[in-house]
Image (tube, rainbow, N blue to C red; front, side, top):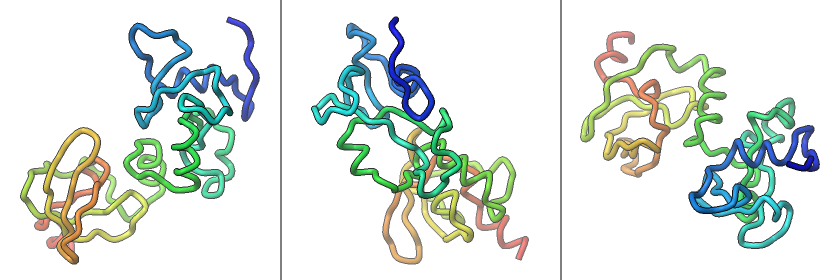
Length: 174
């Protein structure tokens, strides 16, 4: 393979390959980004349907020292990247783990076994300091859908049992 240009100190090809999924029966230059959009390696920086840009998973504005870390860079379809802007996606494992490691308010234990239609104390994401009471509506590999007791609204929570505590366990500590 020929040498590609570098971006943020890394080869574009490395970022492209390590942050996307291959599509069967396609050239290695055509892959799927984390949002499910098809992108073409040769369309980097081009505003086409298959164009892409390098995304900072944790935005530079939030964690400037991470701006060029390889683990923080990924190929993302250009429209998705611009729509994301400086927002954090707490359903993303990298973002979840980053904030979970820095959050001293979430206990560092194995978590609770989770069941649908059961109430728990829940941290809405790994950045939140205090849990709220919720009821689990759905559990799948990508997220846990919860209904918040305080306002009846539903939202998606990262699928980590560490973000949930049974009502009994929290009451005993108080």
